[in-house]
Image 1 (cartoon, each protein chain N blue to C red):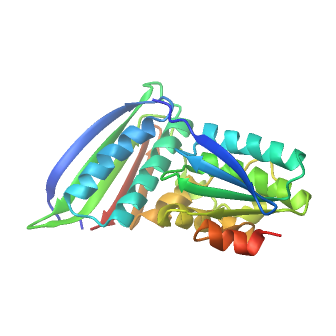
Image 2: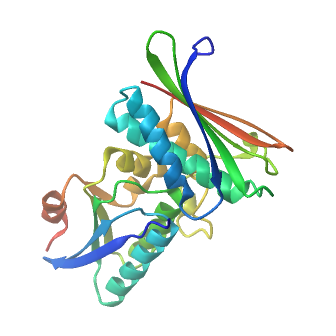
Length: 116
Length: 144
């Protein structure tokens, strides 16, 4: 019954956009962290997680995303999110992610702020 | 709320296994939708159920290898609230010992976890915990 998370990556105007589809649980969070690591090693300093295909998360998966925030702080980069459901956005506010990561309504709004 | 009657009730036994909390969210969704709860509220209920289940999966250390859920639609003439009970027969804990997590403390800390109860409280109207040597019972309610 394990719900898998699918990821797609596109590069737009200096921003690495990671599209998620599925449940962000522990395995999903780890997969996102792996992809983020690779993007950071490739020189990307601005990451946008577009959660348009994610309707449910859990706190274990989101806790792993905090590790990505740490890495972005270390390289003086930026992590942002867009297309969150109201409940996922509320979860991010409860956990305080909004203090360290941008939250945007959609991708055009995010890119307008983040792109070169 | 204590005076409200139970209009509908579903019980569910979940084995402790990967992603079984998703099975619980399907029952929660069906019960919430049966009382015409708004979609955003249903989503919040699902999130709270996920967190309650994974807390029990991870921390109960129950020898039974399963947890028990009850979903009850409460009301008299019409449905007024949804009550969800998550019970395990594990080792229990002292709810008062749970401190609020803060992201500033989690950044660069080894442990990033410990958000479940805060999320449940943020999503539901009430969250009550009874815990002892015979296990833990979490009772959450949300008005329609």
